[in-house]
Length: 221
Image 1 (cartoon, one colour):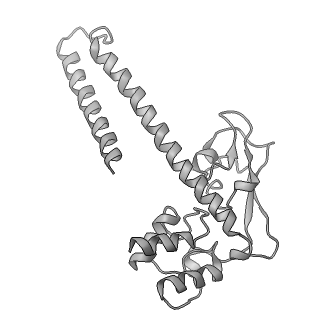
Image 2 (spheres, helix red, strand yellow; image 1 turned 135 degrees about the vertical axis):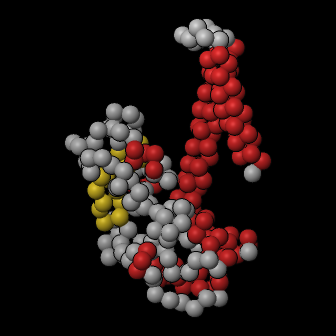
């Protein structure tokens, strides 16, 4: 099944839009390979995408399930700089790091890397993101090349790696602060009752143990 999942994943457009009902293309590929999901749940792939999956899985070709959307031209996101407040929410959800900017600074979309996933739209608090048709009347794989899919897949993989690394680094920094606090808990406490620091020490030690266990289990996985 793992081999089939790899083949299915390679046949998907890698937009990481989650319209299929799964968090990313890899999860959908696993679901298709296991028979949990149908081959007609990927709007960006369109009819050609369904044919590709049918040839890989042996399932009959069927129409795109309208529950997951419709086949349409590929859109690219644009940010209206007059309205952008620099909140970074769109940056945090972009699966291919196609949005550049910083906190309270202007954001912009790198068109070459935008997959048209539309995940940035619902998180924008001021509705300053618009979609523009980038492919005319072309849709599905006529609007998206294998080369673009490969680039999107690579950028998504790096995005996941970067976020995991940043999370680990943040966790380590918090642990170091907690360890320093434990080293001299009385100095960091305004309470004179000796029972309070002991309770606080127990809470901090338990939180540290839980954080370390979670990080170590992630490394083993």
